[in-house]
Length: 127
Image (cartoon, rainbow, N blue to C red):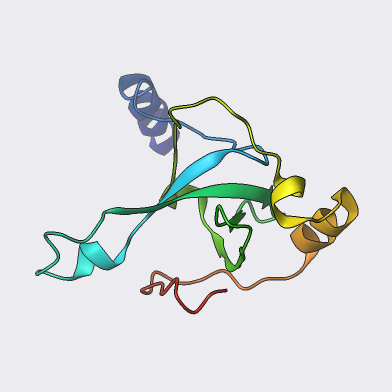
């Protein structure tokens, strides 16, 4: 019965269910979870970014970098990310922004980085 319910749900909402698989170098926006819990945040941005995907970890979380090349110490779950479509189509490579080679990126992805809870993220202290 449960599996039939899952199949019915997937059939009804197939146009809304999207599984993004962000490749390195893709621009994304990060959902600002701080807005969800505070009542007086009318002018606070709902999304932070744009940021660039550095790599995807084994646990399907993403390591992101700012546009100036600062790599975030946190991993971001896929449900918090949305694709960002820039106005110009100039693709920036991740290795050129951060100055890391492919071997360093692979070691960064294989590190055991703790994934954050749904707590407020302060981006001023990450760099």
